[in-house]
Image (tube, rainbow, N blue to C red; front, side, top):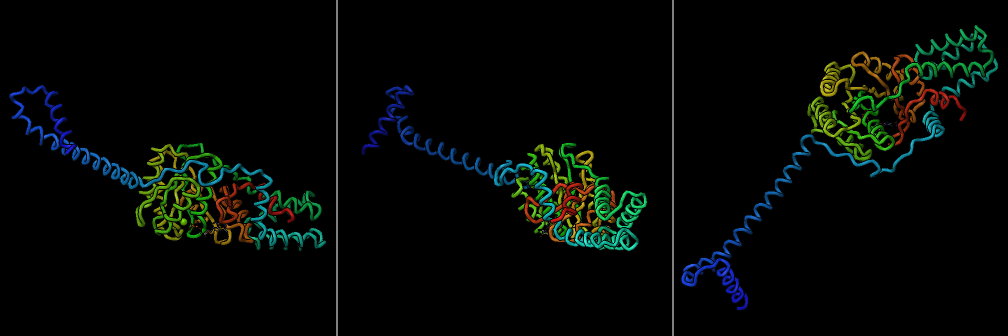
Length: 395
Ligand SMILES: Nc1nc2c(ncn2[C@@H]2O[C@H](COP(=O)(O)OP(=O)(O)O)[C@@H](O)[C@H]2O)c(=O)[nH]1
Ligand SMILES: [Mg+2]
């Protein structure tokens, strides 16, 4: 057989290579003859074992990385979603106008009917104005204040006719909202930590998704979300979907895990990855349940220990459709934890946009954002001037 002849040649070559003397060859040849293939098989087996172990090690390392901390690298901005150029202000007012359509219909529609009535500025008009303000969820306290201030300005001769009254009302509302206006400075800390709180269903998770998208795509920030709502399994899944859509990373543990533990791991991961902004989603704590408020406080303590000064923003999300109920929620949350900013959601579906004037004016907490729809781009940075213009301008 040809391969056997070739094998003989190989053996002869090895023998000459080793310089084995003629007399010793019969002794050595059988060992070489059978030993060489055995050695080759042994080397092959060692190679296979080394390869298998290397693959298994890589798999184990990968599994450990996803478990501790269970986080995903954020997709680079620009992938998955189009890069968005910041909107020009005129378009922002347009979108705000669309969101406030229902509120405008009720509030400004009634106001303009009253002012067109031709009765002049007198007691009857002041009574009716107060009623309209209260009916528009501007809140009892703020409504009475507005009436008082406007009546005072009228007595001073500053307001002479219905058109003047309309203009003065716009000024006074804007003044109340501007008193606590303060845009968030995300570069004030690294990472800048935002904790989002509020009762169930107000729109916390949706707002986080929209905000993460804005930060990633419009401001080029590296964002990491923490799924601290471990109450329901679906909560973390919902946040994971928003993380993917917005291009942010996410840290989440299983359902029932300690929310403060998730916050801790999120901050650890954020520090390791040089994340710019961390946003923590929390469960819909019922503000009346003391133990749940305690949990929010616990998360705050843990966060503050890991990153000095954190959370840099405690954002309370309120559902504008709940009207005065939201004002009550805001007061209770603010007593328990220092709320530093507000988000009013669902302005698109309600005639209760006056809520903003009530919470913004009464609590002295800045309204940071408003939600005007369920889509990813439906979050607006709150601008008191744009808000008042959008509310009062004729459609
Ligand atoms: N129309 C409208 N719906 C919203 C807005 N924000 C949130 N939602 C909806 O409100 C519901 C509850 O939102 P979610 O984020 O799960 O609330 P969470 O329980 O506070 O986290 C969802 O169906 C959202 O799509 C908004 O600005 N406008
Ligand atoms: Mg949620």
